Length: 145
Image (cartoon, rainbow, N blue to C red; front, side, top):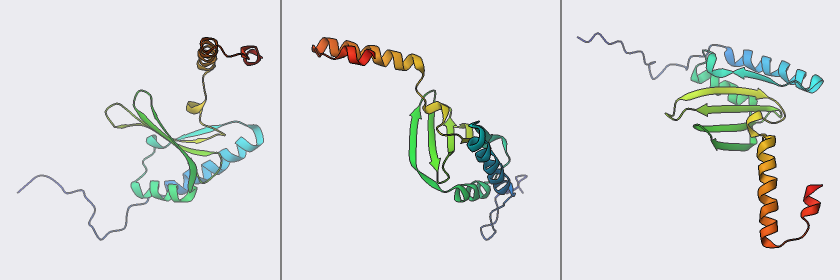
């Protein structure tokens, strides 16, 4: 006889729900109030919460699905998804090994990871000007303004 215990739920049972989805939705509503009133953003770390798959499904259903989805590959794959609730973004970062490194709800106009860094903008401007100079284009003075 085996000493292993089968911890799988029986096939005919209802998925286990902790009630955390409702609590997270209420917190998101408060964070939206703050965003509207003060412009202050907020983050909820889902990875640190003991949510079940059923809780996550309920949270996704409550927030709805938005129109924007961004996939990044910076130190591992990341997916940023707009939810159906404006100002609420579902952000998931994976490590190089494919494990979830972070799963966040960001209440913001746009997630920080999507903003261009000022140094990158300056570098892009320099490359564009060099390209225009090489191509013999005029109008580089207008770009400087």
